[in-house]
Amino acid sequence: RADMYETHLRAVRQLVHVYEYNFQAWEEQVWNDVELDLDLVAAELNGDLWSLDLLNTWERLTGQRFRGDRYEVVLTATPAGTGITSLGYHRSLLSTDMDRERMLGLIVNEVGTHLLVDLFRDMSNRDLVEGEHDWMTYAAFAGLTAYYTRQILPEFETEIENDVEIFVGIYRQLADEEPRAGARRLMQRALAEHRDGRW
Image (cartoon, rainbow, N blue to C red; front, side, top):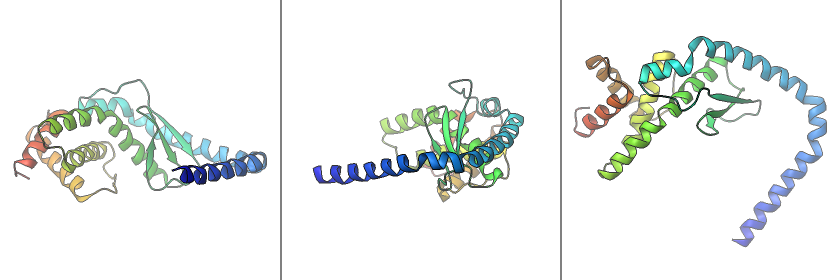
């Protein structure tokens, strides 16, 4: 363990040195252009998000309440893969190295993921007590988030497992059967009926 600690500590120190050595040049030569690009993307996304009235829309669709009055997205010019990274309940990190439609879809989906996380926790705890805690609980949660995201942005595509897409279809059918059902009712029914073999 001590060897591993020393190896990682050495790497961190080298990285700190690189940042310290290059920061002033980066700030003088690069930051102004990066800041302008980030400001432009932020203005475009804010316009899109403002028109969606995102928190109110999610609450209205799901019957769930968001724990707070705002959700923040921190933009970075650094490539960060294909997704969005949670920085806590009220905030996420998103790279601007993808097209605006993709960024908008990820934000809408992430807000829903955070809004529905308490429901997921409740269902997971219930399933754990009943001895049914498995991948299906998460697939049902991710499917529910994708289902509602597509209510807001119909063209939204996810990079998710087949089980999640199966649950998206289940939610569509359940919502047709019970149009006034909120997120909690849909998830309860979807899990119970999936485990009973209906789907």
